[in-house]
Image (tube, rainbow, N blue to C red; front, top):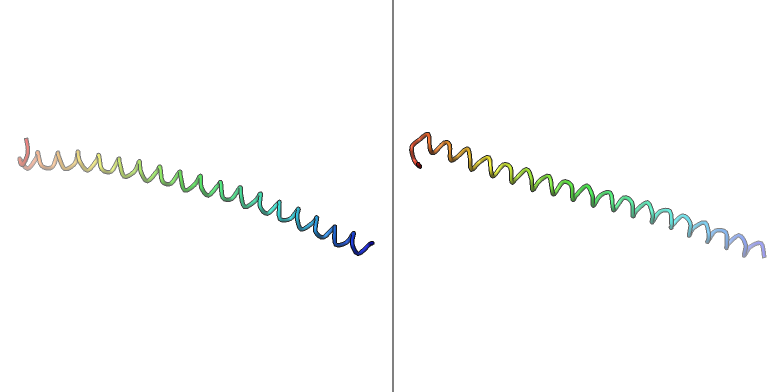
Length: 69
């Protein structure tokens, strides 16, 4: 009987460990996804701003060189 109780306690401890590990993994996964999404939005904004700046800069350059009106 004590052997069965010991095995049952080991199984319960293992299940609690796995549950805790799964919760930690889920939180890590959510955090990583949030960081990747934030970096993606930053990249989109940075590239858009760079494209707009290039347009204005090149337009001003060509106007100085009298290539466009």
